[in-house]
Image (cartoon, rainbow, N blue to C red; front, top):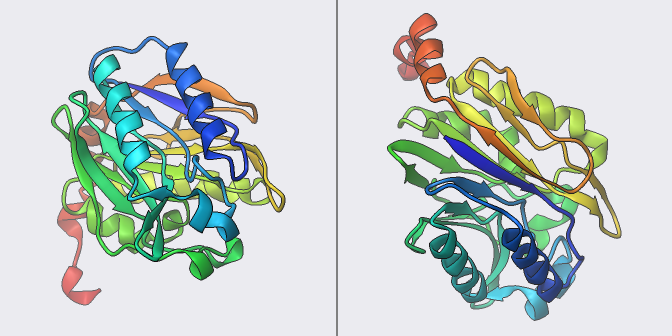
Length: 258
């Protein structure tokens, strides 16, 4: 099954430029029906958190209309990275997923807020896991800092998740941690983990991509470099059966002790 990874640069605090950039990228691609396309975290505003009242997407409506049309036009699934979303007086880091009919099949609000990038000062946290069905396979969306919380992944892994999708803005200075955590979450949960990071910079951070797909054995199926790249890769879900047959971690758990 095919996935397209959109490792892109973002314009800081300029949603109109970012929407236009993504529209242009999609216009240059050829997709297969039911293919999964994934974008990075907070692509609409980047981390211009002090101006969210001006630039966040009101109720996520602009994003919903934009990606519903793209999903329907190309007959694909889209995990639309995540956006800064305004709901009343609050702001959320929200990931929408669209099916080929243009319907929203997942809307996940980031659960773990990252203090080093001031998320806890400006954003409200979500409190629900979100799953969607991709051609008979359960996919969970988590966002960036969530990657550091294995218990959040395990909770979803025990309900049947076969692929975790992780939109991110993971800074360059910690990129080796990013790589190791993606592999660790894949090994622990005997599933695929796809991390899609941005490139470029904002006033406080540099981002150097290294979007990566790890398989259920922790092997790196695909890893991108440090430039803006749109790349297609594939997932072979039979690898899950191999991993889980050899070492039946989920059968051997003792949750009454945890």
